[in-house]
Image (cartoon, rainbow over all chains, first blue to last red; front, side, top):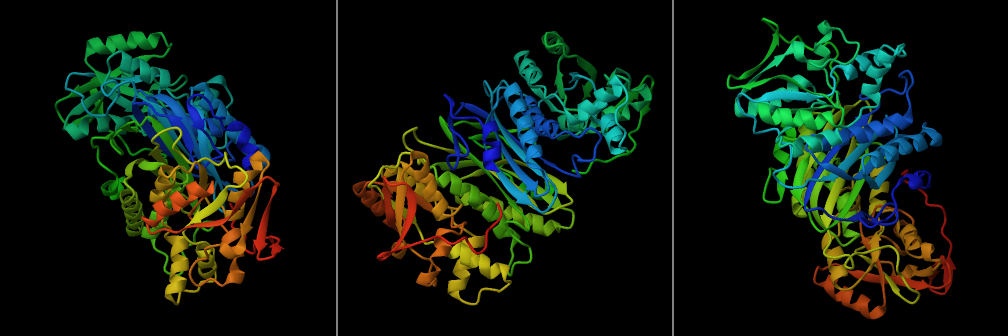
Length: 316
Length: 316
């Protein structure tokens, strides 16, 4: 089986001195400042082979994307990936090849080398883990969750709620019937990690931020709660995914898996960041403000909304 | 659940600048030369909760040990670990705590910080992946699988066959009844990665070697086959685990999971390495020789043995 996937592992090169599967470990020339993250996807929890249009290549791409998004959330540049996969015996070799092809394509798209991995059997669901290692330019030039100040603006990249809308379609086994629905499904199964945006935010002087794949509301909490601050989110300013109706805003606030970035900064710096992201053709939309008063408030025009429990709670 | 395991994750320090779970990724001061590896254990494939004396703390320790052994096989010094675990909902919180306690204890025993990880649910078996990142002193000072020359001696650390004998006891649900049997079981469920030995071998000038957890025969093949060389292994010289009878030598040759190291070097250098490992109270036993003639030969006094297919083939 390792021979099956060998073509998708990177060969030793100027940076990657030793690579799988020839030796016990990969060896590379290190960077002065390293960012590293690991994330797992489990069949029947994070994805289902029965979803309409399910594609192992996209699954492989998503495994890298969810980890790359964590590096993006630090403003890091991806360098190396290690991939561990537990395969049910029922999986066809052709499917495993497509899976690794998707992993390799996604890695190379973001300048990342596949340095190693592990392939094992399982009597249970397909389980995929990737560890991503990236570099940071300096200790100051990274995005952290702490450091926000009252009066700072809160902004998000891209559009929200598409991944949750796509998941609902997939879970009801409805094949997407329009470009809009295909866009939602794509946000769920084929997300684009915001690596370039993360780097651009850091270069524009942004220091507070992260990825929002665990849900916007939860990420805003993480930005303010440890410092006993609060925030108001303007529901009418949320950049909803194309085709979502305004009353579907909870998909953007409570549901998870939009692999976008959030950041907080004083207005002048945020303007600079918006201009930088315009060059990437990615919107950076101000959606609210950090406040001294604890708690997260959702403003809807003159009213304040309360969060209901999310309809579909993705288990994690 | 993350709160349950938070005490076992390392806090930011002089080297580990950012750690889980506060930010999207861990950040550390990098080393000039990095070794990295990842390995997975799957319930019902690599271990069973029904084994006599099963202990989640030892399982956690073993997850780190199998990865640390890969770093040992390169002569690397462990630095950081990232741990991804997929938990069945049936697992008790106390068991998860014991698991993480075992992981943390083993990491700290080998000077390694737990920099991050992921905890997810699964409807299937408990699945554990760790990624270990270590440092190497120089590009020359590492163990590689290639580079062996005809006439060089082949040696292994420690004693062999214990892990396989232990696995047989566990699989037949027999609780170990003697110190000898407890030793076998311990080699299987609580192996000691040979980190210090790997570093000592490299310091003694050894450049060819690796870990033998995939089985001695296979590892000797890896040392010679890519270069179209061969080897003879002296069965009578194999350092069998305490209590194994001489005719049980196949446990040491074909079965896997002895987390020992193999190396190859000219005689004078091997002697130097043996003296270095004496200081660690670890035997380094010469078991054979690299030869120009391709193929692996097993010499038993005057006779040559043929390898039978291993009785119990551990699925991987």
